[in-house]
Structures are given as structure tokens and as C-alpha cells.
Length: 628
Image (cartoon, rainbow, N blue to C red; front, side, top):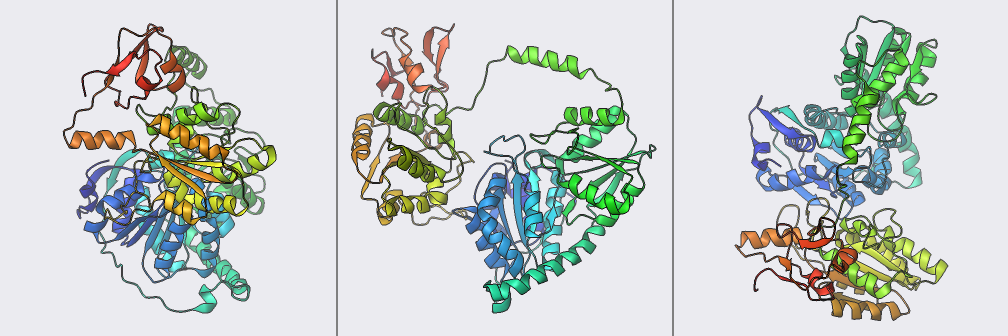
């Protein structure tokens, strides 16, 4: 991430290289947004991180909310006081926020409210690749889709203005490729935030009991009729390429548009291209006219055939003889995964009957040949990660006959060999929820694995349910004192806020006791014997028990030691080693390597000095590289 102060430069016309997410943060400043809320989740995390770094200087309020629905509620509350607000989250976070979002569409807002949903085609860091555009359709809310960093910034300003004009929340839907691609962005003028608002009582609009919500639904539909007029004039819905081949036309949006343009050029298709940036409601008249002007229209989009379905519906009224190609009947483009120029090129060539100008099959074979010789690089827990110690203790005590529902976070990597702790993973907090059903159905020892940030996000209601219904299970909270997987953001257990100010640190063990858990213990997973004894006791307990395995994230610890000038002493393998491979087979630490496939060594540049490998070595063949 660049120097955060660069986002604060009030230099109109300045050209800066930014991530799409950083561009959204700059858009916040240019739009005069005063309240920003988020729960961190890739690919959206850098939006909140960028704002957190500059919030005090910028004079706005930022918070890492405990989960996405709280983030939307806080932002929605501010917006209903006339204060411009933005809530950012990843696509699955929109599921968590949906309950609030659906009703905020009925209440409306007085100040601009943007909901950023960052989709993740290809599941780079997610448990599914749902398409958030369908939430715009479901909620009857406007949706904008940037295709690059410049549009990501500009659309924040446009979305706030649109939100205030319609008095509705507006969804800004990005994708991983937009969020995490760095591109030049030209700055506009900074706007002064206005954090002070006024709440005006309006029971009929704001209190959504049935007698009020029924008429508000009609109000929402009238607002969306107005939105239909706006989308026809939107500068984001336009023909970007005029071609000589009048037979074909192409419609696309978001990051898929970039692939479509490049693929069409490679194929020599000189055709009209309609780019859609406001994708709900769609500009029916613009699309209808485009359909009338072409015998064949190709729709290129990622994930669900959202555009294609609507384009075909519009075609029935405007151009019933125009053929629409996409992914519904014949799958010219895949419905799963992220698109690429190569994938779009294949689809366009098949539709247009063109020969692909490059030998893709040969290229694929060469790529496969080269890739075959490359070492695999699966995601792995960092060297010295306390979760590895926790999993070692859990597996050593509970063994193979225990069921391990797990959760979303770094510790989900515990499901991989050699640790193999993680049998089912659904969504945030579901480790504790699914564990209750499994325990009840099987009467087998069940240990629910959950992290500290996830516990505050979604674990507490599940824990209450377990206590209330007297489920027998062990909840293992792997507390590394940060939201590690998404970039070390704070949470209620860290004692720091998104404004980077100190606050009360909420102890997980105290929360558990407050939920009625009768057996609560806190252990350091690197104190192996103590941790093993605690887990043995918990497994014998007849009701719900909870153990907090607490040790700081190694990356944070190493940074702190380096800042303080403290030496990090790695471990080494001595002459007692018999190459029994116990350290390799039990831990899977990336700092432990095999020379020529058989000799155990420790990479001192990777070793964090946790000493867990020395503990598990049966021959005392691992020791500190120098006296401590």
C-alpha cells in the first residue's frame, strides 16, 4: 500500500497509481463521505484499511464493525441523519448484511449511502463465488459496476449523488480484478466531510411495521421508475467502440469488459461494443436500440448470466429476431470462475466462426509442460504460527475419532495435511453451529474451531445456542489477537479501533462466561502440556466448554521484535537427527525443508523461533541456532 497521505493530496488532475480499492478510498474523500464502516474481507479489505490510516487527518469517522450487518446498520443510521456514508464488505458479507439492506431499501436514506460488495470470481479467497448483482435485483436498489480503478473512484462520487437523488442506498459492485489491479487514477477535488447530522422523526417512513412497510414498498417501486430514467442518461452506459461490422454487437460490464475488448481486437472483430456501468436498473432503451441495430449480440460477463437474461427479455420487445449469445443455452463463456482474454477469445471465435489467430492449444500444452515441473505452492500456515501449535495439541489429545467443524480464517488451513483438523467449513461462525448438529446426531466428540475475529463476528449467537440447548461440544477459539488473514485489522479483542485509538479490550473468555459457559479456560498453545491437560478436561465436560488458545500472530510478533531491535533466534537441526521425519509429518512447517528429499534442515530465514519442532522431535535433534 502506498503512503496513505497520498490519498489526501488535494491536487486536481494529479495522476496516481492506485489499487481499485485505494481508488474507492480516494472516492470517499472526493464525495465528502463522513462515515465509513466495514468488516474486513478479501477482496474488499484495502478500502477500510486505506480509510483507517487517514481518517483522523481527513476528519471523517471510520470503524471496523463486528460484522457486515452491523456495518450497514451503522452506516444506514448515519445516512438517515443526512450524513454521507459507505459500508464495504466482500460478497459473502452481503449475505450477512442482507436483512438490514432489504429493509433500508424501504426506509430509504436522506444522506448518500453506498454499499460496496466486492465479488470474488474464481474463489481466490472465498468459500463461494456468488454474483452480488442479483442482490440489486432482489432489493430493488441501483447498482454501479466499475471496470477499472478510475471508474471505481468516479463511481463513488456518482453513487452518492444518485443515492441522494433517489433517497436510496446504492450498491457498488466490484470484483477481485478491479479491487486488486493497480492502475492510474486522475484525482478530482476533495470535498469537506460533514459528520454532524440531524435525525428527523418520521415514523411512517422509518418504523417498518407491516402497516408502514406495505406503502413503503410502493414508494420504492416509484423510486426505481425514476432510476430507469437516470440509467438511460448515465455516462457509464455508452458505446465505447464503433465498428465497421454491423452484423455483430457486444455488450459487457465490469472487468469482463476489458477481456472482451482485448479478445475482439485479437480476433479482428471490428464491432460495436456497449459498455454498461449502471447495471440495475438497466437502460432498456439504449439496449433495445443496440439490439435493433445488430443481427447478433454477444453478452460477455462473469458468473451468472444476469445481463444476458435481461438483454433477452428486452430483445423480445425491441428486436425479436436478434440472436443473443452468452452462456444460457450454449455456454460460449463459462458460468463459473474468473474470465480471461483467452476464455473470451475462444467464445467469440466460436460465435463468429473466426479462426483464433494464436495457437491456444499448443500454448496450453506448453504451459502444462512447464507447470508440471514447478513445485506446488498450496496455502500454508506461516512458520511459527500459533495455530499450528493449537492444532498439534488438538490432534494429539482428541485424535482421528473426533469431528472438527472449522471456520473462516487462517486456521481453515488446518484442514490440510499433515494437521488435518477441519472436517466441514460453511460460513462465518458456522463452526460452532454445525458442531451442535453433528454432536447431537453422532454423539461423537466434537470440537468446533473458530478464530478470535470470527468469534466476535458470528460466534457469540451460536455459543448462546449451544449453552441454552445444553449441547456437548468443545469450542476451541484460536486467538492470535488480530484479524490476521485479511491484513491484521483490529477487532473488539485487540483494544484498538479503526480510528487507531485505544479502547477497552473485550476478553473472549469473559464473553463466554457471560454467555453461560460453565467451563472456560485460557492456554498458550506453545505450552503444550498445559494446553493438552486443559483440552482433556474440556472433552470430559458434559455440556458446552470453551478453550481460548491464545498467542499473538507470528507476523505481528516478528514485526514488533524488529521494531524494538530484538534478535530473532531461529532453530537448527543438530547431529542427533535420524531423519525420522516426525517434525515434517506432525507439523508441516514451511521452515522445515528436506534436502534432496531425505535430509531434514531448517531454513533459518523462515524460522520464527517458536520451538514447536524442538518439542515434537523424539531425539532432541532440534535446538536454538545460538544460546538464548
